Image (cartoon, rainbow, N blue to C red; front, side):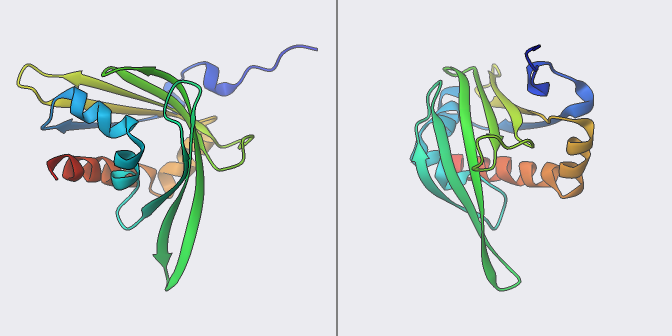
Length: 162
């Protein structure tokens, strides 16, 4: 039987979403906001959603299990999430798989975050998402993933100013 290759093993532009934000802080500070559990839980997620962290082992091979919590139409809703950290290069790059709490989530996607410091001390943060199919990419764009991602990066900028 031939080994099955995950669609997340090869990069394809038709499955990618790219978000970029220039932050007025040195990359060590921006990187720390992604790797300290209490910091990550304070700013992560779209506007109007808060994070309830259940497990945060932010290191290569570690996981972050959390719920995004928000009120919609007067009812609290929870969105369970699981991130698996695949690679962490201090102040340069974080690679993770992000999906639901189901470890076999067929819609999980690969995220690569890079931190590039400019000569003026600002950091260019680039967040690349690789979805399992072109169709899944279109679905997440359709429900607002780009806008939600930009909201998340804006929350990071506000938190860094805090």
